[in-house]
Every structure is written in structure tokens, then in C-alpha cells.
Image (cartoon, rainbow, N blue to C red; front, side):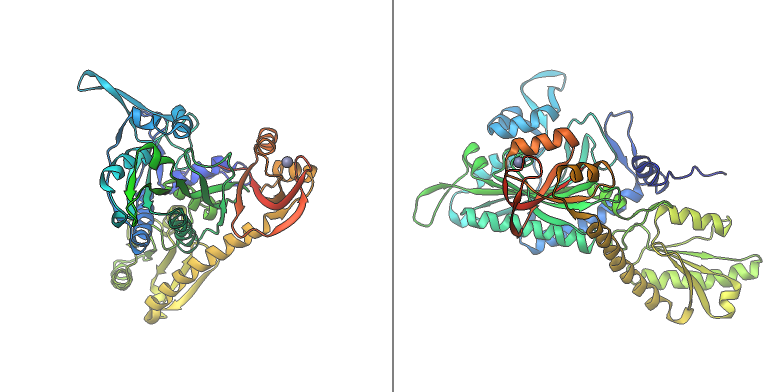
Length: 478
Ligand SMILES: [Zn+2]
């Protein structure tokens, strides 16, 4: 059977992206539900690992999971003016329930600041109830017209942290702590280098005082916002009357934060690591770590290679790895091809000649060459190679990111870069939102963030030439 080829990245990056999702069997457009996707088992396995890694980090920083209703009274959203303005165009609204017109319409949760604000008001009475540190794993709905698997769909999975604090200082500490948690996860689990920064006022979350983000650079030179952490100040505290009695007995509004990442991270993994042969997944998130393929012609050879192969599979599973022993009745070559497309981290081949030499053939998905290694040390060698693969993938992605981050000082160079290779451009900006909006209108390039601990440097705004005190990071973005 002829396999449908994968479009190359150089030819058509969006097409390549969809092809990788298809051949790796990660997800598909729902079609019958416009804008929605079906996450298939290979894709969901990645999400489960993302959840586990993040959930451990949330618990380690004192948070607990809870669950709030999917339906939110429409009046709740209207309590915070900027919030409702930001989200109204994307809302799905329920007007009928059980065959009857509802007295109050419900919106299908686009995010949960409002309903959680309502319950925080009931739960928080004194400073002894603070900090309140909650996380929710849930689905959200935002009515999107232009959708792209994992990156932008009308329904997606995410986690949203919501916390309340006695002081602004404590809230801000939480916001930056969770940004660090996301950055650590992105770099050490996703093997995706990220820049931590502050969003401009134009790009911040609707209802926040300030938003922070982590930004990665994809292989086509576009940025991906991979996680956000918001300082909500007292905006939602005031809207939902969330008050506490401080140590001196006075009543004060709480200071809140919210922070989230979603299934778009899977899109980030694909666009950071996959190649023209298919999916490449960092071992810490991979649905398949090792595929063992026995090679035989005779029943005797089948028995001998199967015995050794199954034993190795069990030994590797005992180390916590996901291992497939693939003895299906098919040519080895087509099995190599299939597992390469699906992004299994490593392939082990065991044939009669290997058994004679007490060795096996080993091929890492991220490297070109195949090598031979002794069977008696196989478990240590393979686990060591997977650890190394995790590091090598991060270093490769970081090298790409660094090589594609450039200081740009003229408008002509700016346009040339972003019409061409793309990447991050580090440019001076006067701080005016109108100037930023003009850049976006003319080039579709946005300010991704003002990096944290940014060096101060005098310069001239890339667009208007007015004085600027620092460089900010621009890019085309998903
Ligand atoms: Zn300007």
C-alpha cells in the first residue's frame, strides 16, 4: 500500500504540520462539530504526560485541584467590563435547557475567573483563609472561526490556576512563580526553550492588570505563546466582592492571579521538534519510547529473536518506558517507516546475525546514524540514550532559537526579516500602543513580550523613531 507522503517544511509549513498530525495519528478535525477536534490516543498520551508533569509541579507549590461548573450565568461575565468585552465575540451561549427557554442564559465556560470569583467570595472570610490556591483541569469553549488542530480550536483542554492573596506583593510573587513553573516545564519536559516576559497592554488578558508569558520559537520562524500568568490585581475581587478581614480587623479586597496552559502545547512540541519524516517527540512526553523489531526468515530465527526481544521489552518496561514489541507479519522496512512517522524515540532491531554477535542495532529518532551495541548492557545503554536525546533535543531547539533571534534597528530591515525568514527580532519600541498596533497592521508582527530582567539601553523606536529605553521581542505568532 502506497503511503501518502508528508509535505516538507520548506515547501509548505502549515501543510507539513497537518501531515505530521495525520501520520502520527495525534488528532483529527471533528468536522461534524465545526472548529472542534478529536484528540486521538497518540495525542492524548502526550497530553496525559503534560498533565502529570504539571500537576506534580502545581502540588509541589501548594495548589489543590477543584472543579467548577461548565455553565456560567451570563450576568457574571458582565461584572468585569474589560473581561466581557474581550470574551464576548467568542462566547457560546445556552438559551434552552430541558426544552424550556432559560430565565438566565448561561455561557459555556471560556475561562473561569468569574465563577471562581463568585465562590471565592463565599469561601474567603479572613486573612486566615488566604492564600487560596486552586487549580482546575477542564475544557473551555471559545468560538473560533479560523481553526488549526491543537493551536486554535473552538473547544480545547487546559488547566487554569486561580489564587487569592492578602497583598499585591504576594499575588505578584505567585504570578512569577507560576511563570517559572511553566518555563521549567517547557524547557526540561517539552525540550522547548522559552523567553519569559511581560505582555504589552494591547496583548494582555482581558481583565488583568498585567499579563506575563513564555514564548517559544517554532521552526518556521513564528512564535508560540506557550503559557500565561496574570496579575488580576483587585479587578475580580471588586467585581465579585471578594473581601477578607485583615489582621487589624479591617475589610479589604483580595488580590488575585490566574494562569494557564492548554492542549496547544502539543502543537508546540510538533512545531519545535518534528521533521520531514514525521513526528519527533522528547522522551519525557513520548507516547512510545522504544520499538523492538525482531528480524527473521525461519521459524527458528523467529523463536530466537522473539525470546530475546520480549525479554528486553520487559526489562525496559520495568524502567518505566513504553515499549512496543512489533512482531506483526510485515516487512521490517515498512515497520521502520511507520514508527519513524509516529515519532517513537528509539528503534531496536534484533536479527539472527545480531544474536550471534550478542548485539542489537539501535537507532534514535533524532539522529541519522544507526549503531550496534552489546545486548548484555542494553537497558543501561538505551535509557542513557533517551536521557541524552532529551538534552540534545533541547540544545538543538535552543541553537535554532538563538540563531533566529536578531537585533534589528531599521524599519526596512524589520520588514525584510519578517517577510522572509522570520524569527524573533529584538527592537526598540517607544512604549506607545498605537505604534505597536500600526506595526501589527502593516506587517502582522506583534510584540511577543518585554523580556524579564530586560537590559536598559537607549535607542529609537523601530516604527516612529521616538526615544526608547529598551528592546522588546517581536515576531509573527500563532
Ligand atoms: Zn513608536
